[in-house]
Length: 463
Ligand code: GDP
Image 1: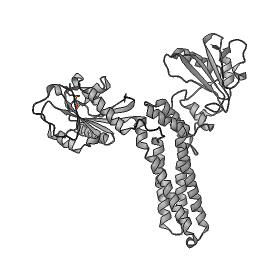
Image 2: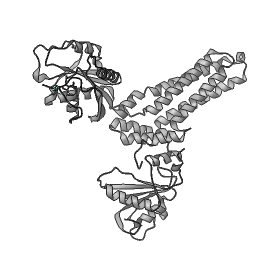
Image 3: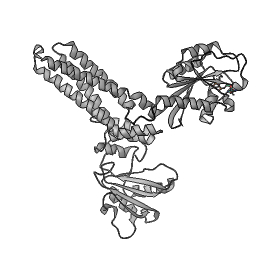
Image 4: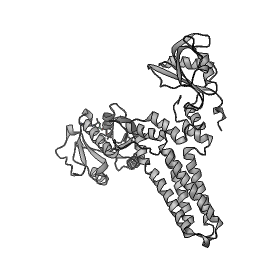
């Protein structure tokens, strides 16, 4: 257990991103936040010190080091427990942005008695003080990291509590079902009213449906959080790495004339027209004796299965290879665009017989046609992520893993229950209790310190 992160200390961190900016903020939270702020902030005029200021008010003044040297001028904002983000007394010192300036102010705050905060420690305190549940705390992280409007919208819904309410509803529903199952223990098997049995069946089924509904939001969640995975496929030397570089606009993969040098997969993220995209360059798809290259090809195929969209690059400087024909025959034209590359040296013997695919002609080495590839990609994303749908909360990886586990337990409860027999209620209740425990970990009804460590260490400093 990490006892070092107790709630009784006063913590501080720079809350704004490093670098230059108009304003930068040092945040202080904990029982002595206002006292600490008062040792660093000298209010202009004759107003009260932070500890005496009204909650939710700002004052203007100077920030000073321990020896009284002026560091900067700015504002001090005061919030009082429990009406603050962390639920504790909080002061924010708003100075001029800039890494050195803010570090100097933070140093003065630490000298005045605060401890430097761990990443995510403010949010962790918000959770421990009951201001947000774990799902809402995770939404803060998602919101900060959102790379598109839709992702930010989904995170806001989650922060507002929409997803938490779904999880809570499911939890309460299963709690009732578990209570009903346990109530049947008071009856002899053949005394149970038929209505009770039917209702219980329906309740368990409804629980499973709700788990499935939540699980069905996972794909969209992944698309929003991590971006669409776009895999670049094709034979060695077709120009995959050149295309990747052209799309990214800088040299990422080593472009080379030797076949099979891109042996591993290379992954790069960027934002295309507001959508996060992860481009994956694969090893050339070619039958080969070389073990390393075979491993690369195996990974390429695996990557392809895990991707949303494929760009299949064909070298048109010679006739279409039989291998390309075979590979293309296996691809889904609904989520593949064929890139006919090296059109600057196109062979008169090159013919492309697959009319079902969308085709883009490029000369990636010269940057020609790359815009058309981008456009095809954007159109695919537009088709698959409804930009105009109202924002709704979607589950994340941690929620999915726990929901999967809960689903198995609920299914087992259903199976035990419908098998009948004297012990069915005991066995079903046991599985339902396990499901409840798992679901409880999603919102944080039950938690371990190391679960909190895992969640909050993903946060940035000062959040
Ligand atoms: P990969 O093995 O599919 O990743 O292929 P590369 O991107 O490494 O490219 C293989 C070779 O083809 C390199 O020498 C590139 O310069 C060359 N190449 C790539 N695109 C074009 C193109 O549009 N036209 C021509 N003429 N050569 C290209």
